[in-house]
Image (cartoon, rainbow, N blue to C red):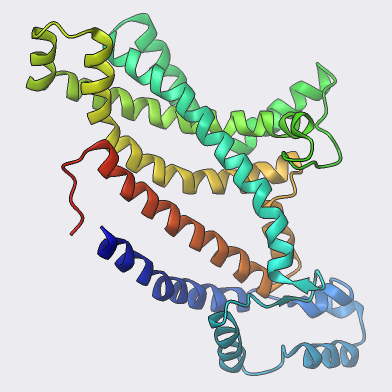
Length: 317
């Protein structure tokens, strides 16, 4: 297993290099630059000589390949660079935002698991019943409704009908848990509901397949307790594909968090990404994507390692 972990970790640098290189040239192709955004937001709103001088000071007039070489050498040392728009090192801006996005995504995962596992298991156990039909209908609706649309509708209902508004001042969950939970509650429910829709259908499908296996029928024939058969034999073996999907869904949760942070005005990575793109700040955009890339690769590695816990027969070549 150690060799497997080492090989996976050694894949991090070339993967991030490829990701960073593609993104660097994509960001540079965006019309405008951070200099025009800082001075006026419109290139024709300031003196062209002043704008040109400012671009030279920021190094934006250098050949693209030179800018790429400097960025690559800087990133190789672990320095994500400096954000001219925020007037801070990139990591100093990103670091406090990570807590918000990760908290939102983790709450979404927990809600999805709590909703999806029981729904999927009971839907498979009572196949064809009204409960099964209800779960399948709700899950289909959950997959069809976009997160941003659901977020806007919930905000309108809460504000117009119940007079509820999210706290204006953002509080860390470690500093003020009650106020933070109020702020995270509805975006987390939206994320969790949409993910639960996918997971519950997968759990149902895998449970139906596993329940028809010989070893499950043997467990029933031995007179084992239903709880032992369902959880210990059926559910445990049905979870392997579900865990794989959970790894992929976490990436979609990050994407969903980007949208919901904008809708609910949460100061996370998503809102920062939107502001950075509008400001044409390439250093911040690159730093954000690379940070998310590192986290996702480590998360997928942890998902792969969890297979051994669920199924001791799994071997890592």
